[in-house]
Image 1 (tube, rainbow, N blue to C red):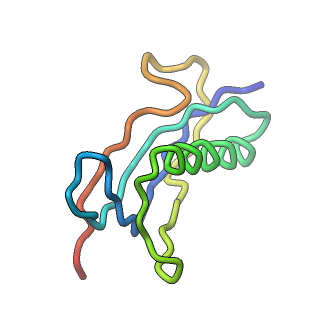
Image 2: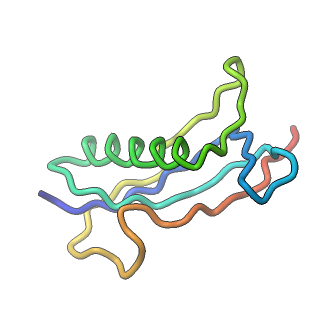
Length: 99
């Protein structure tokens, strides 16, 4: 199998982590490092890894009519794994703009 580095961009996430008093509307970026035969398969695996992590951390507070979105930002094949946490890096959260 080939090695891939995938950047996933989360948008419209109402996040309340264990240390937050109130939920806040945020975006985030996270890197995923799946093994797959194709880039398309790697993208699917990356999305599933991120969904599983968000579910396990029980931090998303969106109502059903205001769904968050996961977007593939970049997917590239790599020769070697980078020297970092795998299969997922840590989240980089950004306060969402109130437009």
